[in-house]
Image (cartoon, rainbow, N blue to C red; front, side, top):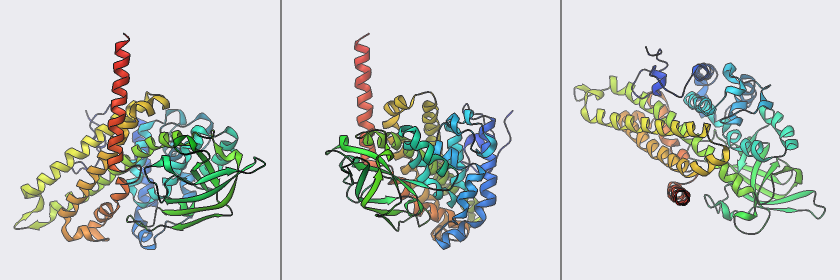
Length: 432
């Protein structure tokens, strides 16, 4: 006997396990988390999405409410929550020791469905992991209470105007003062999500010579010499995309993350979760769009028939559905593998795979967004009403394609990593 269906009953509008079909991945705590987050978003977010979009900002007080609701801790943690964080609230009453990568997946799936609220957390989800994985305990003990309580916010600052995916060639410098107590930072970062309202900038800087070996990670507090200005982007202002300028910014040496010269590796490790998280967003965006397109196709009449009675329209839905479900299955497989691999092995074995998954997520998004828009017709171009969510999804699709690495760069990375693993396997076989 299957479980009761949850949410929409329209085809492919929800993951298959939401419809009551069996899955090896999800248990009662995942269902409880799903239910609670959806209810919270329906109450605190859904009624205000259009208002926030019109104003171009989400109220600042909402961030503190998110902390009280237990959203910030799991967003910062990702696929596992350390025992020392167990005193912070976790939404749904999930215990820290049972939190896993599928809880992370469910959380983001529901937050993205909720609407614009997901824009508030992008800096936290990409800025906190390097602090957790590589920083000293003293720095963690100072910063995490501030950002997990909602008192302060953090973002990740890697991309520069002259180098996007080419992280090895970043030019922002951090030079030690003569007394060795501070770094002095000079340079620029661009397209930094949540930078306008962040208090801390997890920043890739050059502390040494050229190339990857000269890059370090430095946590830079907002202070004298650090300036931010908004960067208008196609997806809109809610994510507060930012141009950051560092002019003789003094940062205590204690704010170095790990050791000098380790920044490139730290950035690459961070990219794996960022790319997976982008796919989480892509999947729910596709499901929301196909839900709204189905609702329209079932009632809109053209040439004496409803749209859904037209074979060409059913062909569109079938092609969207197969791609969405294939993307879901691949995503779940990678989340499952990460549960059973160490962070080191996960990065080594799945870095290239995750890059290709992220590419696939972008391709599916582009296809679904365009097909749904065509089904909606003029409504798909309208920012309000029945086509509003599809219009927003179509407009925001580039923000799921470009960040985390462009398609061409990631496809090349995926092939190179696959060949590297193949060569390693061949060498291992030859020694048997």
